[in-house]
Structures are given as structure tokens and as C-alpha cells.
Length: 90
Image 1 (cartoon, rainbow, N blue to C red):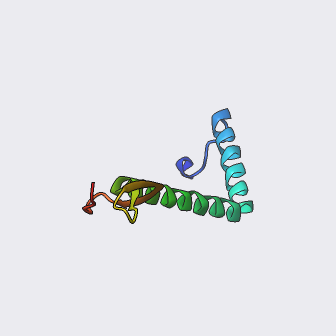
Image 2 (image 1 turned 180 degrees about the vertical axis):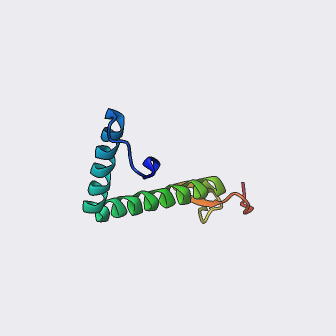
Image 3 (image 1 turned 45 degrees about the vertical axis):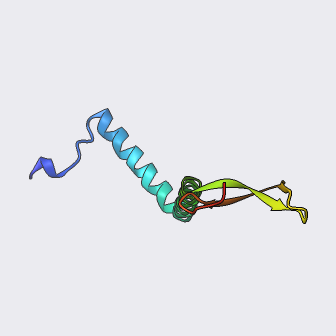
């Protein structure tokens, strides 16, 4: 019989490895839906973070100015995000 085909259970490390592997596989089997749902939630958060980072990198905040009937220009106190590549009046 070829002894290399079987796990050596005479060593403490081998027995501990088998126990840990058995516990981990059992946990994964019992909680597979929670693990998958958690992975999906992490992926969604990552996508949201990347979209926000791209938006901040490609746009800038600009103040909104308005003109009174007498021709006076004033700041309305509002801001809007515009593309960094779009030309605006300064």
C-alpha cells in the first residue's frame, strides 16, 4: 500500500490541520448565503466609492452668479458641479 496517499494523522500538526479544515468547510457550508450577501455588499460599496471618486476627479464646484435688472452682478450663494473640461465664464 502506498502511504503517500493517506494523511499522516500521527502528527499533532496534521490532526490540527484536519480539524481546522473541517470546521472552516462546515462553517462555509452553513453560512454560504451570508458570505455571498456580504461579498455582494462589499462589491456594491466599492463601485459606489469608485463612481464618487471619478465624479470628484472630473468635476469641480462653481459658484452661481446672477445679474440684477440694473446690471449689477451678484453671487447667489449656490454652487453647482460642472465638468473640468467644460468652459465657463470666470
